[in-house]
Length: 355
Image (cartoon, rainbow, N blue to C red; front, side, top):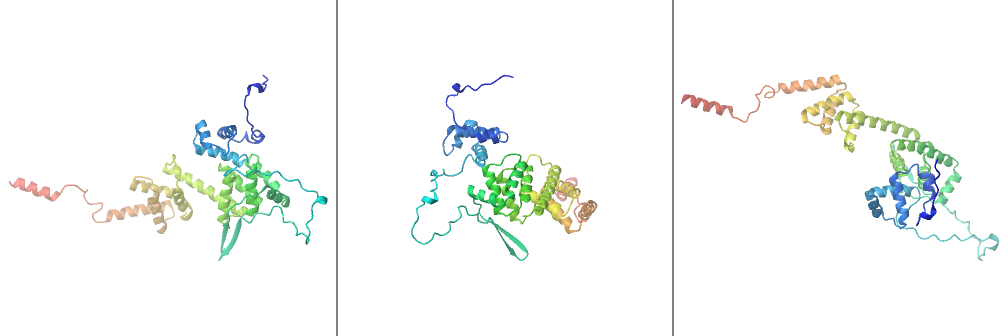
């Protein structure tokens, strides 16, 4: 095998790259994310000129911002105004040499890092539990260390989360999971289940997991069993949406939120299966010439009101409706509409024959 040697003399100007990039992220970051990082470090400007980076790479500024968000979550960049310069820590004065101020005995020192305020509050109105989530703060490193010292379950949680996500947690992600655990007062098993589900959906960033979890909690889904039930419901819903997409031939776009609500209503609220929905779909296309969700919804609601529960009953209902329509005066037996006045034509023919 050929040996490769580094020739430092050919490098010219260089710029630093954090070791964590090579040690922790090369396996997980995308090529675009790495390119954006290298150019940002190469420019060395603060704030980062995203427009210039996007132009050099030939990508949209929004995509460049998404790439940089990965490194912000990894703790390499901050967002917003540049932080003020940190003052060098003053060495602690030995206790024996500490100056004493005359007067009454000093009060006990306050904790260096108070625990974060509760992120979640609950109240009960009647039989309904109402959950209020407050604005999410940011845990300082000392607050994080305090939580880890006080709760021996946290180190195991963080270690298992890395296994679930198949990558090391960044400082940004560690802070996020700690805040969800301590602020929302959720169990480790709950957070692990949420992280696993979110990853299976292709959404494994802390922001996406946090959005999922807070959405569940606001709905009262705050235990492991509740989360497991919700995941099963979502799986059924996704399966039903897949059936309708196939039935309607929807392959080149995503379903809208309203269309998803219709599908949920048909399968869950009305309790209809795919076969009955297919019959309503055929009737909709026959009458409208397209797969109109609102029209199909009206058909299914009408069948529900009439007690139609099986495909056979649906067929019988459609046939009876067709017979009733044909039996109306002037409907099926009437001659096709014409743009000519037949009585006027007959009169003209009689006049011509008489003449």
